Length: 290
Image (cartoon, rainbow, N blue to C red; front, side, top):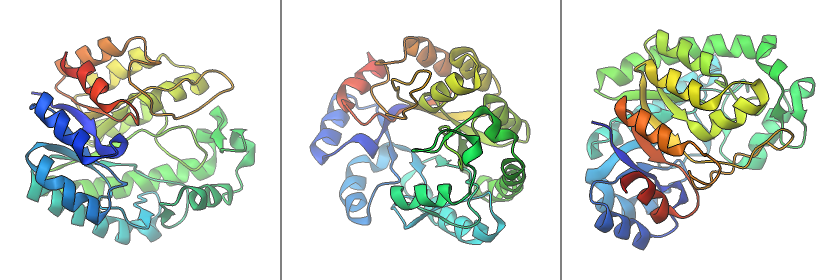
């Protein structure tokens, strides 16, 4: 049976978590990659029996894991396996991972530093918008992208065996269209699934990419769910349109007219449904349970 819940990334206070638990006792939570050691110490006693997933890494570290570079794999594996220990301790089944970046090495958690790393890739020719490094359709055809994708797959398969042996699921998330990011197209996720890798499908990211790469978001979401490898989903929406590409993480029903159909279809496939909006947490939870 699929679990329904909300990421802690958009919840600003403990009282909100307590109200959600009281109003929706079947609601699960996802630990955020922004969680600090002190915030987790306060949060875990409240949610410890209702944590469905951990968005790596939690607690937060200075870097993000990066499976698309051999030089960063050792650190990434060690950090992820540490999170696996926490997942076992609190009963979380899914580890959600941004699978890789074209950066050769570790990727900074700090947003501005990370943007600088991405801009230092010198891939301006593959950008629709240079200010935020928005990817053009040609980006995924570049040799640098293809090479990094192969490395990411090799490392993901190796790490996946270790995570599965612990009784957990390593779920690879599709990302938003930024040069330096990976796993942007539905067919890429379907390919990963064909290799036996599990998925976290972020519908908000898929929506932005559908505008740039020209595919239908709803039908492709269903195709991804049909793989049977989607263990969990991230639900949010954004006001993106041609010429405007923002990963805003707003309420799921705000800019996603077919949100009810996604919830229904994903539920029929047994995928967990995790809201990842940064606004109106209690109202968003109501979308799932009412």
